[in-house]
Image (cartoon, rainbow, N blue to C red; front, side):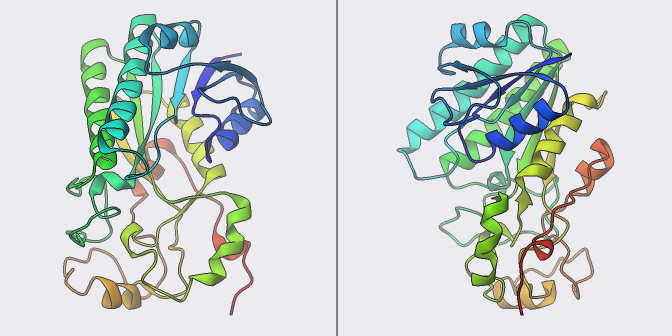
Length: 283
């Protein structure tokens, strides 16, 4: 049985990732600064800002899923968000490399493209946004994710460790589908996330595939459901919110995701299976 350490287990996504790995037969050690209300595996309280504690937590592990972070911009002072997210990730990578752990998965973000928290109303350069799209954040959260991805590249170069940085879209847990009828016909509220979403259970699957797949090197992959979160076609959405975007690289008369997930599908053989239309009654 392979041992995997999962950080950030008390967050929104953490319980779904822990549950998935336990169900798949992994020996899971859950790590966080705060103990979850209902631990789903062995738990260890760890301050990831302390490199020594990271070494202790990761000892004996075969792989690490690093989800822990301040998850949004502007919830904390900028320097706190940047320092926490960058140094906790660096410490995880440093400890993993020092312990000879071969596989690490990092929770990166669609926010690294800069559109999500832009105060200048940044529009995408082209659609759909894929992993080659410029990363132009105006905030320390998005910047912290770029730095983490660059650190992943460095550790891969230095020791050959495989690191998959998952640029995760808007995380949706099952109970959150009840909110969809309130926005599926209004283009504005979710424009900055390109109307994307991804089910926590599909993310958990991508995390597992990221450590079970060989030969990935250091790679960043978008994670999104196959469709947008809207009952408006992409043509309607773009016309309403991004009329200035003229470089369109997809058909527009449907609902397919504008945050491209094709690379994750290709490299991981991943297929998101949860779509909001399966769970929501709407007109």
